[in-house]
Image (cartoon, rainbow, N blue to C red; front, side):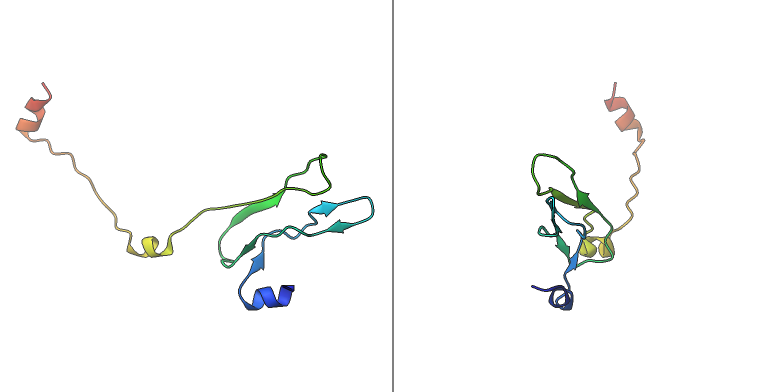
Amino acid sequence: MTAPIKQCIGLYPLITKPTRISQNTATLIDNIFTTDIEQHYTCGLLINYISDQLPIFAVGKYINKNEAKTKHNTKRVRQTKEENINSLN
Protein backbone atom coordinates (compact mmCIF):
# COMPACT_ATOMS: atom_id res chain seq x y z
CA MET A 1 0.00 0.00 0.00
CA THR A 2 1.21 3.50 -0.70
CA ALA A 3 1.34 6.18 2.02
CA PRO A 4 -1.76 8.17 0.87
CA ILE A 5 -3.89 4.99 0.80
CA LYS A 6 -2.73 4.01 4.31
CA GLN A 7 -3.59 7.46 5.64
CA CYS A 8 -6.96 7.35 3.89
CA ILE A 9 -7.86 4.23 5.86
CA GLY A 10 -6.42 5.68 9.08
CA LEU A 11 -3.00 4.02 9.31
CA TYR A 12 -0.10 6.21 10.37
CA PRO A 13 3.56 5.10 10.48
CA LEU A 14 5.47 5.10 13.76
CA ILE A 15 8.81 4.27 12.12
CA THR A 16 10.05 6.90 9.66
CA LYS A 17 13.80 6.21 9.47
CA PRO A 18 15.49 3.65 7.18
CA THR A 19 15.53 0.13 8.63
CA ARG A 20 17.83 -1.47 6.07
CA ILE A 21 21.16 0.21 5.55
CA SER A 22 23.85 -0.94 3.14
CA GLN A 23 26.93 0.79 1.74
CA ASN A 24 24.94 2.25 -1.15
CA THR A 25 21.35 2.54 0.05
CA ALA A 26 19.15 3.21 3.05
CA THR A 27 15.56 1.96 2.80
CA LEU A 28 12.54 1.89 5.08
CA ILE A 29 11.29 -1.69 4.71
CA ASP A 30 9.95 -2.53 8.19
CA ASN A 31 6.85 -0.75 9.42
CA ILE A 32 4.71 -0.33 12.50
CA PHE A 33 1.40 1.46 11.93
CA THR A 34 -1.16 2.88 14.33
CA THR A 35 -4.71 4.14 14.01
CA ASP A 36 -4.47 6.21 17.21
CA ILE A 37 -2.41 9.31 16.48
CA GLU A 38 -3.24 10.84 19.88
CA GLN A 39 -1.51 7.99 21.72
CA HIS A 40 2.07 8.70 22.77
CA TYR A 41 4.49 6.01 21.61
CA THR A 42 8.17 5.53 22.25
CA CYS A 43 9.52 3.97 19.09
CA GLY A 44 12.70 3.65 17.14
CA LEU A 45 15.49 1.52 15.77
CA LEU A 46 17.93 -0.68 17.64
CA ILE A 47 21.39 -0.08 16.23
CA ASN A 48 23.47 -3.24 15.75
CA TYR A 49 26.30 -4.34 13.54
CA ILE A 50 25.15 -7.95 13.05
CA SER A 51 22.97 -7.33 10.02
CA ASP A 52 22.15 -4.60 7.51
CA GLN A 53 18.53 -4.74 8.72
CA LEU A 54 17.83 -2.96 12.00
CA PRO A 55 15.29 -4.19 14.57
CA ILE A 56 12.43 -1.80 15.27
CA PHE A 57 10.27 -1.26 18.36
CA ALA A 58 7.25 0.68 19.58
CA VAL A 59 6.00 0.93 23.14
CA GLY A 60 2.80 2.68 24.11
CA LYS A 61 0.58 2.90 27.14
CA TYR A 62 -2.62 0.93 26.64
CA ILE A 63 -5.71 2.90 27.62
CA ASN A 64 -9.04 1.14 27.56
CA LYS A 65 -11.26 4.01 26.44
CA ASN A 66 -14.45 2.25 27.58
CA GLU A 67 -13.02 1.66 31.05
CA ALA A 68 -11.73 5.23 31.33
CA LYS A 69 -15.24 6.62 30.77
CA THR A 70 -16.89 4.48 33.45
CA LYS A 71 -14.14 4.55 36.07
CA HIS A 72 -15.34 5.42 39.58
CA ASN A 73 -13.44 6.74 42.52
CA THR A 74 -13.56 4.20 45.32
CA LYS A 75 -12.94 5.06 48.91
CA ARG A 76 -12.14 2.24 51.32
CA VAL A 77 -12.63 2.74 55.01
CA ARG A 78 -11.29 0.42 57.68
CA GLN A 79 -13.92 -0.63 60.17
CA THR A 80 -12.70 -0.02 63.71
CA LYS A 81 -15.42 -1.82 65.60
CA GLU A 82 -14.52 -3.20 69.04
CA GLU A 83 -15.20 -6.75 67.86
CA ASN A 84 -12.74 -6.36 64.91
CA ILE A 85 -10.02 -5.04 67.21
CA ASN A 86 -10.55 -7.92 69.66
CA SER A 87 -10.33 -10.51 66.85
CA LEU A 88 -6.70 -9.42 66.26
CA ASN A 89 -5.66 -10.45 69.77
